[in-house]
Length: 215
Length: 215
DNA sequence: TGTACATCAGTGAACGCGCGTTCACTGATGTAC
DNA sequence: TGTACATCAGTGAACGCGCGTTCACTGATGTAC
Image (cartoon, rainbow over all chains, first blue to last red; front, top):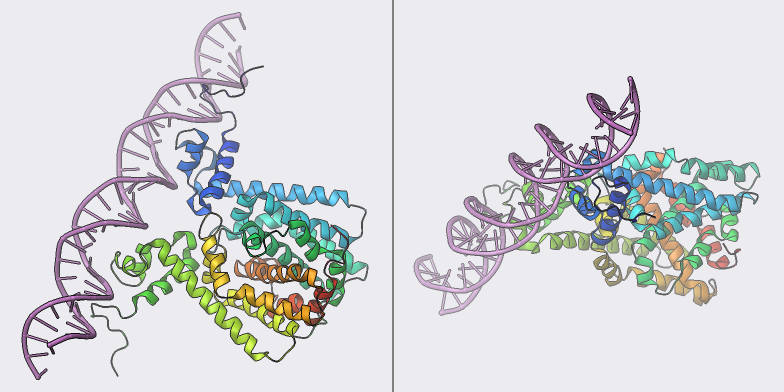
């Protein structure tokens, strides 16, 4: 049993991971805007020019952090779906939506960099990640199953999909930045997930879309 | 008729407004993280130390920009509600939600700074603005009317309110950062607002909340 | 109408700071023979 | 087992930059009398 921390070694062992962990800490403590190569290096206990070795430049480091988040998100949604693999599509949509919001709540720094970094920044890269992990395909596929089973009129499938995505994304955003706990103290995430993705709600959304009065 | 631009004058005329307009442009072009006092001053054609005169410091300038956004949001939601003042509460909720999303789509820079500046920044100030403009009170009041009319069980009122807020906020976020147009090209905002806040949808949400199967 | 003065708006030089990036380097590790 | 060498990981000095903030200043405007 060797000492767990090889602190006298010249090589770090797993510097990329340590740097990404540092990025997460910085985002939580000082906001995504204050992430810097030098600060991440400092926290990883390494010279300020070391990060460039692994990530090329600052954008590269943030992109790696974001990518890590998309991997975790995909894994967690996937795991949630395995549990309900044999259930009808509305139950699986419910599970996927809940996993999306829970991911955000559990990984606020990642969610922030992935989706909330703001206008003019790495947006397009994020959209591509979203496509590459197949998240959007998955949503469309689940909605597609509901169409096949006759539960969603084909012409409303896309609106249904976007509407679900927006519910999940809005819940995640407001929860992560503390707005919900601030305005409605004591409310739990489980209650909210149930209100937004409860089965009765999903079934109604699926069938009634487009039948409402025009705004 | 004098020349519209008093360019030789020492005093600007309305420098605060010009600076806030510059902030908006910077947010759109380079992201909220790249807003600086000096860049705003440059765009307003004024010395780099002028902004401090009006806003104190950088945080003050961003707070003023955010405040301006909350004012516009409150005005637009108010105007939308006047049109439907005599309608039942679910119609007014629909109108308010649509106004919220339309505000974001029309003022992406403001929406970004108000709500999406990220963890660790001016969050708490934003929550307070939200309270001060009475936006949250308004939502609670409208939902309260539905409770009084027996359309929402009192114990589900808060979940209903949050669920509506999340839908609006998610739609606004995904629309503003281009995710929806990117994933679902050709979709219009009106279609989405109808899907999310259509009257049938609202009525169902109001009555069915909490009756779904637990997640 | 004119003068004195206070107030306000904007200037420009100066400061110190943290940053991203480059580059020649050195320490450590692995591999071929 | 030992040696030579290539490759990789991290160092530290140096650069130039844009920034926020301060401060004594000056130009313009308004107000009291």
